[in-house]
Image (cartoon, rainbow, N blue to C red; front, side, top):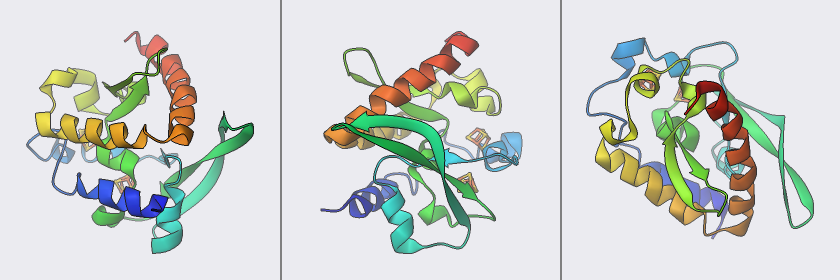
Length: 173
Ligand code: SF4
Ligand code: SF4
């Protein structure tokens, strides 16, 4: 089974499932889709989705954010939308925003409010996790429990969680 197929299946969990049972974009004018330096990390293997679909509204670049798996260093790609996206093709990070996966020091998966979202998203600023739509939180958990079964993905999560810790310290959460 290839990674693109897995991500395309996971995307479907979020076709109708949203952070709250209302159009939160009305609260903020879709702040998470604006901003000149707006971009979303693609999770390990997710780039294959865009090699397959090749949409004209996305630009993918490499970042300095790296992790090691099996003695090999991987650089995480970032996706930037150059125009309005096709909702059914948007990356996983956009679908789960403003939540994100996090692993603790024992490698246990949690779903948290993304500390990077605190500066732009009224939901991230004003809500606790329990205030989000329960089925949305469950879908995020389900998606990342499945991805975490892959050792390469788990290696990414260790580094990604350390990266999130820097933001958590800053926002004191
Ligand atoms: S910034 Fe937050 S509230 Fe605004 S559209 Fe994005 S997820 Fe919804
Ligand atoms: S890909 Fe779509 S959902 Fe994601 S930031 Fe761009 S416009 Fe927003």
